[in-house]
Length: 174
Figure 1 (cartoon, helix red, strand yellow):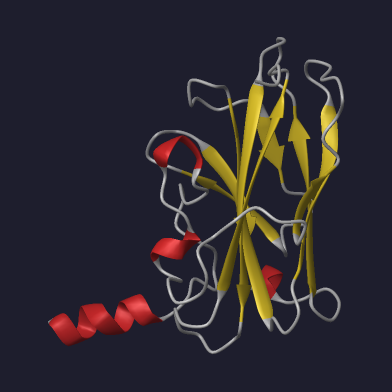
Figure 2: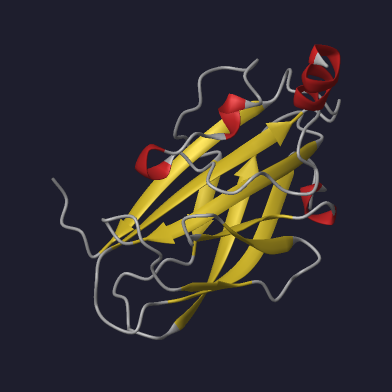
């Protein structure tokens, strides 16, 4: 029995990560399974492009998640949009359902994440995913949490590098 559980833990999530692994609001991150690399951190290697300066309620915004890391063979991501209290903020849409999927967690938060086909690189050392975010119907602060995995492609938990990012809209800086 222990051998079976150990073996299951060694393989990555090619079909997408389990929901609720962005690191936001006390969640775990991809590092819980991909624990062999350096501690996760925020860096320019992981970007979330398309967030508006000012949110117009109900408006759809095209977002692009981009990860650039030398030597990665595959990549994955998970993204959430929540109000400061932790509940869902707006709606994600995945027009590119070949590369991006939506996942609902037991807490009713919906995450955008890579699919099996979506873990392929879009250029050497680069992965890019496109999706839409529809802003909430009323003005309210929003926090985006993003986790990404620069995977070495060996289908194990070893040798991958995890990146994290947090972006806020409508929250004054401290």
